[in-house]
Image (cartoon, rainbow, N blue to C red; front, side):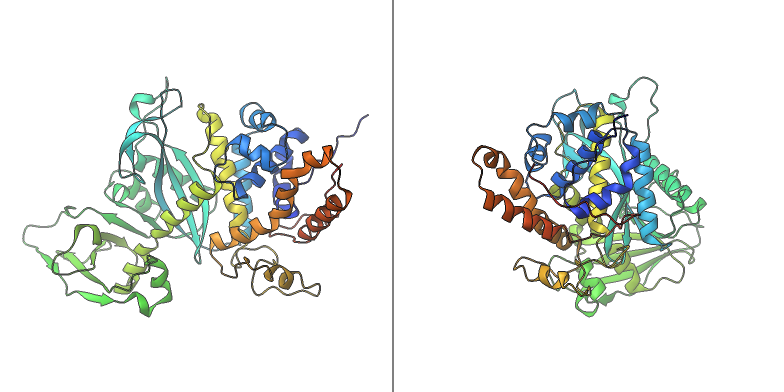
Length: 454
């Protein structure tokens, strides 16, 4: 009986992470493609299309990657379930702040499933495109992609498909995450969801979840006729006074912001707030109306918690621009969904290297020390970044990928014009990078990480 061959390695920290998913793929070629897609998505190529990823992965063409997305018999549900398991193992029961928002991308034509003329939030206008509702988790400043679901416009529904509004999709996502055992400390959302009393907010109330949501300035609140609306005095809070607030207002400005509570009749569990930069003019683009249901919440906490919504834009920007969320050339949603799920997996790989989430000590962390001095040697690179943000971690992982990607760029020339010393030198550098263990340990230690040019 012929024994199945071992999957070709990429680089150690990717191989160790992807080994958690190995059992999901019935063919060794499928598992190789899974790893190669992670390699390409984490690389610094500008466009993460399959041909470009195939090039940096050292493949002759992209057919194997396309086959993996379109025809290989693996289950996206199983992949998502396994990714959730990896997240929960890293969290160790920690509570999450969950952020609900949507992401849209311009897509032309009518062949791609669920593409329609609709409002694209990041463009700020109606365009032809595809939109998904997303849920992010925030753990001590680090973001994790939890879930997503495509929005299906009424005019693009397939036979038998029910129409779900974005708030209904968000409610479904929240329920599903709770069933999977996630512990939520807070839910954040914008006004589309904050104004959705019939489904999204009703779900949060039913599940007894605390929330901070944006509302429209003309938001209506029912109260007895004899009661009145009261506006408390403005209070100011300065972003310079708090490291946490510095994060929230990350545009570099040091302006003071003001907050006041608006009380409709008597105080209730739901409380209402205004936040602005100018109490006299209340500029439209710099004034926010917020509704909270957080017991004993303080003034400064309202601004800080609502400001965490900026992590949505931060997370989406990284996922879209850095990992290739919108770079697919696919028309069937079953394939697009697979692409998005792998992007979420690559995003998680980076997040797991945070000090707050790492399942083992990692040389990417500034506090890491070991006898071999690997952490010190890596930090000697002039482009090594000692900060703890998601993009800082991605920068360092890309530096570790560089030798392998460089070799893949020229290996076909080395087959035509052999230069033994160059081949040996590059392999030696790649092996040094393979000393970096990454954040997800294998069940059994592996020694098979020596790259071969054969």
